[in-house]
Image (cartoon, rainbow, N blue to C red; front, top):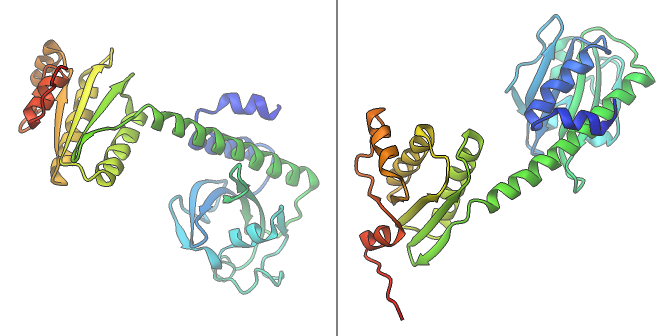
Length: 280
């Protein structure tokens, strides 16, 4: 299967990580396959697949300096250690003492600019020799993960462009939302709101959904969550563009709009804050 064919199967990096580890399991007889990410300070296990013994846990974190993953990153290419007790680079590590030996293979995963994301690794309590075919598979899968990382990054940048916060006057801005508000985008919208509200020192944010064609009760709940979050931070969210029938439906579903100003359109929302349009 080519790299392009593999890429078409994956929706995002998390999906690719799970699929690739399961795929590799079919061809490599190693107890533990895992993907770790690091920021040069902390090494975190983001995905792990065990065959028998559980050697690592998802979410587990260690100082980057004391990990086998750092050895792989420093090596720059695929690092193979048939017995971690005997290799000078690994035999003094705490992880080697904890595991009491074993074998390790690791290859760095890079972003498109060459910076390191983390590693794709195999770990086993049994000393063993990894073949050229094994090494080639690790390198190929690490390359695929690098491409998926870049696709994720590009997609995220595009999504950020679709969440424009427009300053009106000092302390007031408008967020005109277009398109569907599904779970992944809802989280991105919240991140953007928090970042831009802090950057612009906002007191009021008008969230205008009049350009959103398909607004359901779940979308309304996201909007309410945004308003409540801003309130906790000392800011006020004003909602506009919500159709009357949908607002009534949301109320019947026990979605609370308490203390959240809602207005028919943008001029009314701005008037609520104390701003008015003046025609030339």
